View 1: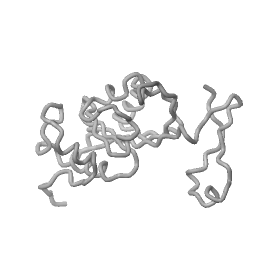
View 2: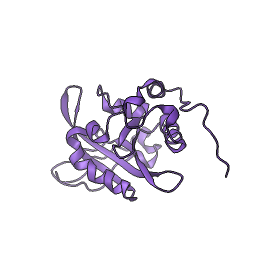
View 3: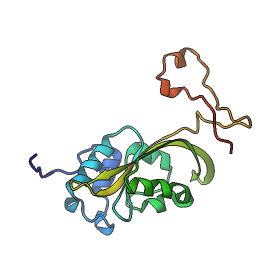
View 4: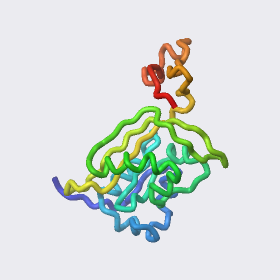
Length: 189
């Protein structure tokens, strides 16, 4: 396989693509974009064009880069270039061990994970389905974690009986992909 130099890093035309290109990365542990390793630039390009809410936590400080869809979930918080533990704040206590599993090489997939988030100037009980995947460089060393996440708050509501809310099988749902229909048992809160 031949080596290729990325002459034009970060080609995504997205809003976050613009923010990432113009962010003062030299003031972060990642340093200037032109000094980023190819693995990081390729991972960021893939992240920025993804329509699934995605965040990359890179390096020992887990410096955060994310796409437009993830930005919507953050609300008004500015998290670009921050360490992932700063981004999550009070939720780091719950998410940190999951990130460290990924950093040790173990990918995770968790459904309807409960978190209380501060968004829109208030705390909200929220639920997320997410996957944390180790990102390796060309030598095989784990250098970051890719976090892909979908907020399930609107479709997941635990009740006292422990049963999940079910979407009615109306004409819209009948033809929806199976992943839209949430059912089964839920953990008690």
